Amino acid sequence: MRRIAIVGAGQAGLQLGLGLLGAGYEVTLVAERRPEEVRGGRVTSTQLMFGPALRIERDAGLALWDDTAPVMPAFELSHWEPEGQPDVPPRRFTAPFDREVRSVDQRVKLSAWLELFEERGGRAEYRSVGPADVASVAAAHDLTVLATGRGELSALFEPDTSWPAHDGPPRSLACFYVNGVAHDTADPAAGYVRNTGVPPTGDVIMMRALTVGGPCDILLIEGKWGGAYDCWADRPGAGDGLRRALELLRAYAPWEYERFRRAEPTDAGAALYGAITPAVRRPVARVDGDRRVLGLADAVAVHDPVTGQGANNAARAAASYLDSILRRGDLPFDEEWMRGAFDTYWASARHTHAFTDLVLREPQPEHVGRIMETAFDRPEVAHRFANGYADPPTYRDWLMDPDGADAYLAGFGR
Ligand SMILES: Cc1cc2nc3c(=O)[nH]c(=O)nc-3n(C[C@H](O)[C@H](O)[C@H](O)COP(=O)(O)OP(=O)(O)OC[C@H]3O[C@@H](n4cnc5c(N)ncnc54)[C@H](O)[C@@H]3O)c2cc1C
Image (cartoon, rainbow, N blue to C red; front, side, top):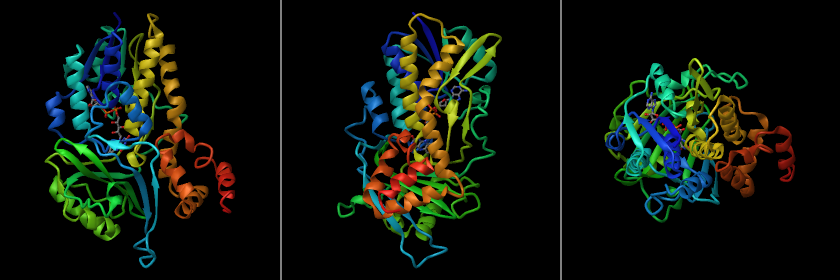
């Protein structure tokens, strides 16, 4: 039986591990925390997942929250300039999602998947693997996959210099899981994914989710450096942080403040602060003379969460690697095969990475501004934009291509 080691029990590592177990492989998964520590710990993401990624989980028998996780039926985008043009009302569009969109707190999902992994006969080792330990893990297995997210082991993978290098994170991040948001039936938008953008300040993204205590709401503040949303250096506790976030809503998205004014943190671990420097790395690292390890998902390609793509990518990457491993049969998992496994995944995921880069570019390319302006007036443009999140390569021919944008907008007289 072929023996495979996976280091890192996140979305990608667990999904791959469970898939390999189901296919009869002997799998060792190295996890830093036990299920109960994950469940009782701090939130790690907003993990908004779109139809295709949810479908991957469902096909793998891992969609365990279909009856309990709220479905968000539409996307609302608002744009307001309270400092420059306070008297001009916010611009806004709403577009229905064609396929389901949900968020299951990774504390709920990953702790349950880890338990399932052990119940199904997987071997879990609870420890942190240091850079010097990777070689001994690799020596004991036919294939070693590093699915360690933004952890220190990604430094083993060389940067891919064909992608722009980022000196630092494009945004500051603050995230709060809350109860007590107004959800009366007269306000269906309360159940949407909503993004309010304020030019010099940043974005606030709101969504429904399922957390450890049941359904909740999430507030993700994506702050531009030096703007009013960039105010989390002191890492306040969940209660103090949320009070500060509500004051920001009162100033920069008062309609959201009305919904959130009675919000309370869901639990002691309900707040997360940080910042992510985007990076694309070479997928194969040499760890001991001739031994190679393969990087998976965020360990080798990571970006800011403003477009909600990292967990979706992780699901796709794990499914793609699983397929590559199964196809390999009894042949060795050599470097050429590793590169091929990554390239198969990256052929599509590269467009997701480029999409996120585009959204965060300052200033925005002129054609993107024109598309968004048109979306505020034309529901079909808003619909196409909103549903592209589920499958970002579909942006390639219009949002990400100035000529394609011209051709598309010409149909709307722009
Ligand atoms: C604030 C925020 C909001 C986000 N919102 C979204 C969203 O709405 N939609 C979306 O799709 N994505 C979102 N993301 C991104 C998404 O959470 C990640 O891209 C995704 O979880 C990556 O999965 P992964 O398995 O690659 O890594 P991770 O989920 O980071 O898992 C890595 C695992 O490896 C473990 N590990 C690390 N180092 C070691 C080591 N040395 N030894 C052993 N174990 C180790 C860690 O403990 C962790 O369990 C968001 C991220 C953030 C920070």
